[in-house]
Image 1 (cartoon, rainbow, N blue to C red):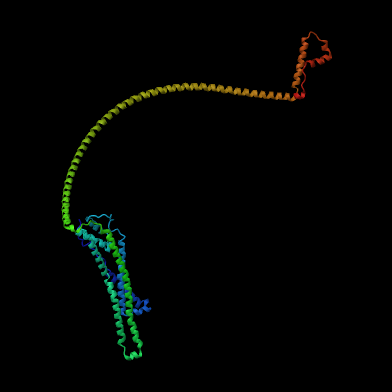
Image 2 (image 1 turned 180 degrees about the vertical axis):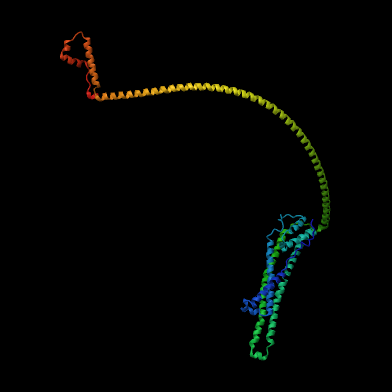
Length: 459
């Protein structure tokens, strides 16, 4: 468990704005005085308010106040940034034991230094330190109120320089007025008052310029201080609400009347935890030794088993190789015998194929000769067919010629009549008188011949 007291290196303090007041304010005041006395502001109407040394001191003090307020405003921006960072782990809403406070406090140390200097982180760290030191959350509310009041006092004290400057500027203005009045009336005599009254009045007007400048600068300083202080007060209020939400009810609390009993119980629990821790450590050592011895034995047994397995595998591999060698030799002999038989069968088959090829070649030659004879016969048939086609065409031409003449049918009838006449004459015993009659000769052919066809129809 982490010690309840914070380390010296972990204790952080809020940065002071006094250094920024002098480091920024004095150079700024000197620059403005140079602009008024030697620069472009020398010819303006404002130069009359910066003419005397007292007024220059007022301006420098005003610039110092502005430097301090500006530094506090920049610091307030960083304070606001701390609210956007997850400083503590998310809380589920259920109370956790106080031992969690040390873990949360250790987590704060991992934050950047500029965040650890803020009101929020310092408030959370102070509460966690209180819980780690007390070991109880019974008085946490009083501690939170005390821290709130302490932050308010710190905030109030941070404006000490600004309030001093706000008080000192009017005093310097009155001092400048007094010095101006003294300078104005120191050389005033009745003769001077009678002759040149404006000299005294002009001196008095310049004397009151110091007071006017002081009052103006004081009003500006007070207004700026009010704005910055109001902003920081709102930051403290937000810090109080955030701490209330994150830590007020985060840890377990025990009633105050049972404090002695709880303390005794806590001590007994702590003693029990220490004894349990020692017992667990011794038991862990015993287990470690037992595991180491067991691991050594397992390694030795594994080595022996590995040697035995290697010997067994070696013998098995030798037997396997010997058997395989014998089987390969027998298989080689069988392969040679079968190969020789196969070669003999292939030689016989080759001779048979060669003889069969010769027979096929002679048969193919005879088939080729027969095909040649058939081709020649087909050529003769083709020539005869061509001759018949020529005869047919000639007969067709003759028939067409006979038909064109128109005498074929008449010639046929004439031939028929002549044949009948010859037949009648050859068949008779003698020459008939009737046949000799010129009239009968002329009539017999006409009686025996068929009627002639119309030559026009024949044609």
